[in-house]
Image (cartoon, rainbow, N blue to C red; front, side):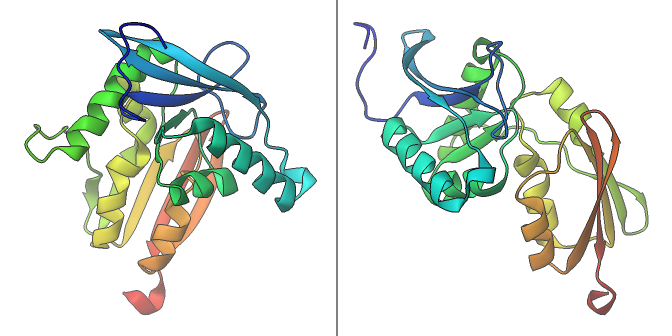
Length: 216
């Protein structure tokens, strides 16, 4: 730890999954996890760990890898990846992590992620303006997460959609994104919506939630 870094446990630490080019990576690809710590006005890499989650080797292997990762992360409770999905995502959430989906290099988003966390924890902090789906016809809504994150990369799909879906005040919702958010199917099912996903092109997916007939 550098002389400018104060030790406050996991406060000010952000773990980032990086690909071979130094950009935020996906859990489905090999990479390394780097824990950054706030040091004065900037962030510095505190520790790093090579990682690969090979789902073909079974659940026991995945749990072993997750145990190693959680031990390595220690008190850190913020995790950033380009996309977080499946068992790895749910294990992190279960362990109390705030999981962010952000594209880019750490220097481009670490400040924004930490600021977002601090604002979420403080009721006195000014609220971050989060876009909401727009109504295109009675009961039918649309939003492009790709467009939102193009303007504000630190805004996650969960921040934009979770509260809207939980209110369940719509008949259908269409979402354009670069991958299916890992939490959305479970949340939709809880609220009585069926989910369909259609691949439109490379890194572009249309997700549609529609109210089940007996829930109308």
